[in-house]
Amino acid sequence: MKTFHKKAFTLLETMMVAAIMIMVSGMIYTFHINLVRTYYRGSEILLDVQQAQTILEIMTKELRSASVLVKLEPDYLEFLRFYDADLKQENDPVRDLNRVQVRKITYRVRKDDDDFYNIERQEGNSNFTPLAGGLRSKVLVPTVFKGWKKTRKGYFVYDSNRSGPDRIPLIQITLELKKEKNPITLLKKVFLPVPYGNTPKL
Image 1: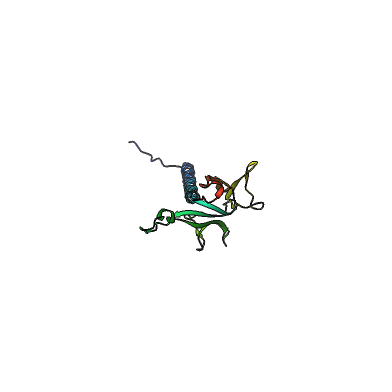
Image 2 (image 1 turned 60 degrees about the horizontal axis):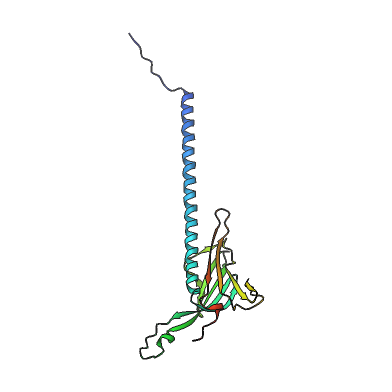
C-alpha cells in the first residue's frame, strides 16, 4: 500500500519568495513614481513654453505697428502704436487717414509680494494687467527688452543712461527661465516698421 507525502514550502522558501516579491514591487513602484515625475515635469515645461510663446507673439504683433519709442529699459518698454479706429464717417474725404490712430502701449516686468515675476501690459492710461498667457515665475530673468541704436559709427546696444530711445530699428525680447533643470530661453528680434522709430510724414 502506497503512502503519499504532501510537500509544503519550507520557511526558508517562503521567505525567499516574499523577498523577491518585495523587490519586484519596489522596482515597479520606483518606476511608476519616476514616470509620474517625468510626466509632470514635462507638462510644466510645455506649459511654460506655451505661455512664453503667447507673450512673445502678442508683443511682436504690437511692436510691428509701433510709431514712436517712448522709453526702453531692460524691464520696461513704452511706445506708441498705430491702430485702425474703424471710424464710420462716410462723408469724410480723408476717412482713411483719420482711421489711423495712435495709442500708448506699455510693458513692464514686476515682482509681486510672493516674489513671482509678472509681465504686465498697460494701454493708454488704464491700469496695468497681466499679459495674456499668464506667465508667472520666480525664475524669470527680468532683463527682457534690449535694443540696438543706429549711430554714425554703426549699430550699438542701446543704453538708456546715455541717450533717448530714438533711432532704434531693432528690439530683442528675451524670456528666460533659469531653472536648475531644463532652463528655458525664448527670444524674438523685432524690426520696427518705421525707420528709427520716427513717425512718417504724410
